[in-house]
Length: 100
Image (cartoon, rainbow, N blue to C red; front, side):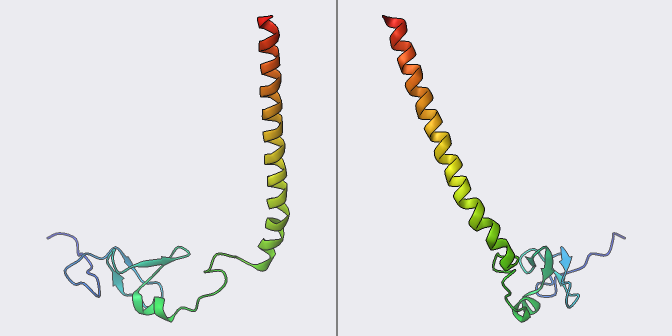
């Protein structure tokens, strides 16, 4: 006799791939939803409240570094492009000097 296979609580014809961490129900691939790495069934997922962390921001303190680092990244990108254009211009002058 083979190993006991657990079935989905919503689809008894399908094999279960995991268990809802809130109610303990077995779920198939279609019925399972992961929120921040935690498996939930559809009823438990409907009962969850949407928090700012679930919307993408871990906390308001994450905004301050982003406001500082974004302008610095643009400055670094602009400086990098300036250097690249200057090097291309210098290379062009050097190639013209070799032709004469």
